Length: 198
Ligand SMILES: N[C@@H](CCC(=O)N[C@@H](CS)C(=O)NCC(=O)O)C(=O)O
Image (spheres, rainbow, N blue to C red):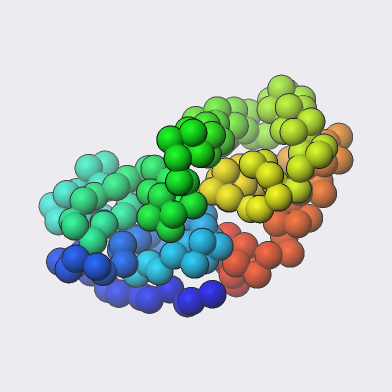
């Protein structure tokens, strides 16, 4: 796996450059960086501070001034961590058909728009069976959500399960296949060096 390259400002891009990922340590930026490592997708990681986040140049990339954000080689700005993840998965050639893209997007959007908001609003006290019962059933006969290989779907879902455990002490032991799944995730070097802070 290639280490990420680190830059320092909202940059001008050249065709063929790797996408710039703008962010900071201890944020969703590390979910995106985990995925880039798993995919072997070269990215340029750029650390931002508050001043840069509110600058007009950065607002061209992320209209709401949040992190993470991505600037593609052609200058296109992409915001929302889930959208950035799907972009990287596409760029790496891991979503070769509209169906593969749709299947992966379903999980990325579920993690970002359904699972995490439910956990965050309830501090992990919502009905976990509603969220993780179906995930547990799916993982009964698959190593990963979409089959035998880790994909963008797993990076999105497992990151927010881990956030639930870290931030809300969420207990997933009622879901043995999810427990096994998270054990697999925890063993991955790329997860340890990004989401778990190295
Ligand atoms: N749904 C957005 C959330 C973006 C977000 O709130 N990011 C946080 C860091 S994880 C942030 O920018 N915090 C600084 C701020 O709100 O000014 C995403 O997934 O990208």
